[in-house]
Image (cartoon, rainbow, N blue to C red; front, side, top):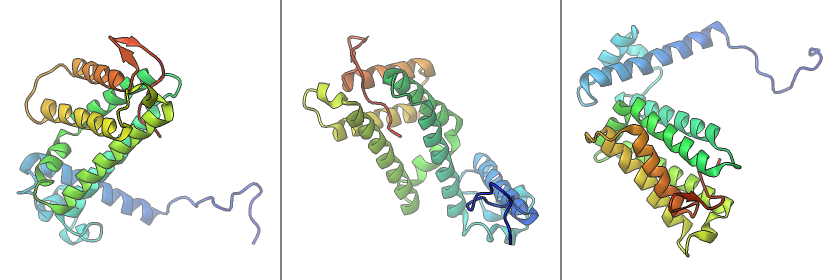
Length: 223
């Protein structure tokens, strides 16, 4: 069999009609699960409601997901993957402080756009082991990326002997707790003011800002 000139050995064929229908059904179930979550909450949501909202047979659900916990875990995993990708896209090594600001602003906006899912994670991580693992994994990844950013930038040389790992943990906690307070606990801070305050604390912690004045390269989130 001959291949067409210039064709890559790793080139994938276009999806078949069946593959497109399969992916469309999966997306429909995920969208329906989120709609049911918003209307009924996790505790009262059922597989039957999700399948009905998606316009699919009840049994079809189990071709894609094991149970209710599985589909909501998938929604959370997708949300986190999107947020990480967006954070990477705004990082510029030559403008670290601006990158910190863009990254934090994107994280805060992402939290605001997905309050229902963050509320689900907040509520269920206290009692459900799978959601607890998801929450812990997100936090570890967030801390690791901040730490890598600090170390790769050389910012730790201006941190008065503070440990990058501990500082990264504190910064991750600050962002997470500020978003939780603002969007899940009823605080009414202006979103842009909250972002500016987070960035100021972050910049000073890693030695980038001194009394609000830029002092040199510092860390944002590493790729």
